Image (cartoon, rainbow, N blue to C red; front, side, top):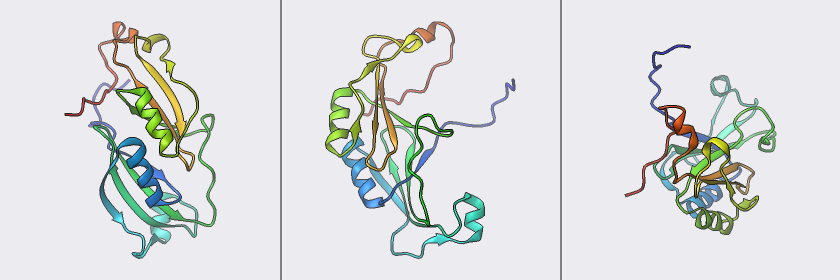
Length: 179
């Protein structure tokens, strides 16, 4: 196993394709407290398209990017929203499909976060569950939910020490508290 760091400092952003950039932005603001950083491409400007872009991004021929926006989400990676015009779009991946299956957000108050998400139009799958096994501890919990267009979002909190911490000096990344 290589021991030298490849220079990776962490996750910068997560890209999410949405059916309507404005509606998705409003949802992320209302549901998760996101803030708009900037628009890379505004609807109404010429779309980004063509063979060169198709080659770089590997999207379906005939597709074009109609709008792009970067959102700040707490003290973690940003969200980059994409709105495409495309000849066809598949539904979002299911958890059992290959590839990235969900986005997890760390919350301090699970019940408040889930209520806000649901009030904004998201679907909460169940009540929060205790984190299992090596993540277990008082107040450590998770819950899965779905955004209106189908992206799966996990809510997670682990205010208590976790048993895995007794097995390694490594620690999972935890966003700093907002000041």
